[in-house]
Amino acid sequence: MGRKLLLEHINVPGINTFDVYRSKGGYASVEKALKKLTPDEVVEEVKKSGLRGRGGAGFPTGMKWGFLAKPEGVARYLVCNADESEPGTFKDRYLMTHIPHLLIEGMIVGSYALGAAVSYIYVRGEMMPQIRILEKAIAEAKVAGFLGKNILGTGYSLELYVQPGGGAYICGEETALLESLEGKRGNPRIKPPFPAIAGLYGCPTVVNNVESIAAVVPIINDGGEEYAKIGIGRSTGTKLISAGGNLVKPGVYEIDLGLPVEEFLYSDEYCGGIANGKRLKAVVAGGSSVPILPANLFMKTINGDARLMSYESLSDGGFVSGSMMGSGGFIAFDEDQCIVRNTWNFARFYHHESCGQCSPCREGTGWMEKVLHRLENGHGSMSDMDLLVDVSKKIEGNTICPLGDAAAWPVASAIRHFRDEFEWHVSHASEAVTRNYGLAHYADPLPKPEPKPEATA
Image (cartoon, rainbow, N blue to C red; front, side, top):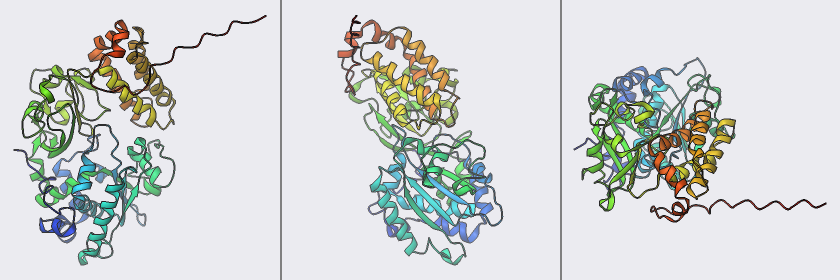
């Protein structure tokens, strides 16, 4: 049975209210941090924990906090990235909906550690119910004396605000988020300077994901060393996984990092196996931006050991036979799913969400969508697979932010592992259009070009 550090009280009636949350030990980490620890000691505990960013990058959180510049007389900010937009990922929304005070508690501790007097929670614009829930919880915490002036009589003051996002996937990239938070168009910034030096309003800023900030609460309550005992290797602690696709029990699960993937997929405690007695065909392990893996490679690493739900094990083998933990958006495909159609669907998303600032991403994502569309709808050719790989290589590593890489990796990995299925769509074009893979078509087939009128004398 896995430990529950974040979801232990998630099903307690009224846990979204201050009084019930407080009765379950809520805000104890704020009392401990503000009354017994210095800001530097809080940062040190987070470093000891080995906590890695839970938003996708997996960068050590304590190290990121330690990079924050501290010039005299200059404001500092902690910004929570709650712009959860990765297809297949919904864990942060789940946390904000059911236990909002856990995030607010983590924001208070983190802001104290960083010396921030004002902090922000940037929430995806479509999540209006979650925005209202957070605003109500912030008001409750302020009435109880955990926000505002002179918190708990310690002399530390903090104002916390919720900011609706711009409804764009690109605003999940931390510098685009800061641009949007400043009221500008959400375009990623060129780095350096990094946000730790010049972030929000040109001031030192740390941007962390919802789950990362929430994890600070058990780290301070139990100690960083205790937290580090959970997990395996450099993958410490617990991790929230958004499990979707063709599963018996889709949902949000908190796992100990290092859990065998087979146990996560097939045990009754977690996903319960593949729905309708089907066979597993492929897995997207960490949200739509990570490489897709066929079932046989996902279930075993390249050295024959069982693959684990950890940062290192999922990436074992690199992009040849590995994937990434990413944002924890776990999508399982059964034997009836069409990889070409799903890859096209992902490509449509990234083309739509590209900010257009970098030409490789702006043009390349459009070409990938068009080529995949014609393959799926019976107008493709055998050369299209090599064309897609070539386009993905021209995007990868050539953009300001990682959206270009996120668009290229799923396409390249799908062709690498399922090329025969792409070729089948060419050799069986008419059957590919009519065959039912269990998903609806999203568009009509590409129209055939009209014949040019003959020139008249």
